[in-house]
Amino acid sequence: MAIDFPNSPSTGDIHTVSGKQWQWDSEKWIAYGVSLAPDVLKVDSGNNRVGINQTTPTVALDVTGSARITGDLTVSGTTVTVDSASVLVKDRVQFEGATANDYETILVATDPTADRTITLPDATGTVATTTDLASYLTTSSASSTYLPLAGGTLSGAVNAADQIFQRPVMKDYGETKVAMAAHAVDLSLGNVQTYTLSGNQTLTFTNPPATGTAGSFTLIVTNGASATLTWPTSVDWAGGTAPTLTASGIDILTFTTIDGGTIWYGFLAGADMK
Image (cartoon, rainbow, N blue to C red):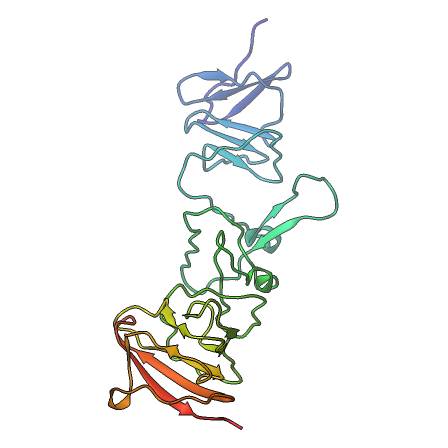
């Protein structure tokens, strides 16, 4: 079948014959191989561009309207820009999720007043939001604790791992009190410890803070002079003599070290407390 092409066409002109489209590229007519109207599918062979509902495509694939991809979408470039004249789509990305229903997750960007960058860490985990941050305020050997920057309530213990807790203002706080076990003051268990002497015993002090950090504890002794109580040789007393304790009663002593427990300075804070 002979095709009667127009005379003197202009570059980009479309010519349709029996449902087939041809375009003039300034030198020759090039077959589209499609039968869609050019306002639906525009092939700009001169600039290697395709337009869908776009008669003047400005990029390799220029789509006006919604698009659906039933497979995976791979973007090999470095930047994905979400922008449109419609406020409904220019500032958000919507995720349907695994279930096609009426519930979606939408990421919304507040209209920026300057260039902003949000960096995701090189780590695996769950991103907490301001509405559920409290549920992540727990600690264990396998997880980290995230403290709120302004306000909030802790729901569990926080292990500072010997890190500096700087410029706190303390209010309504307490110290852990434990009963000393096996005649050993273990500072990892608490800084206030109680002890009842029963027979001749020798005490030991363990787990002091590292050298260069001051550490202290309070020891509440019951019946400290009812038998022979031997203190660690690392304890220095006022005048070099250990105080006389109460045979039947309660005495309170305090101890301080600044060199990792090499020397403990001992003080009788209260004798025969009644």
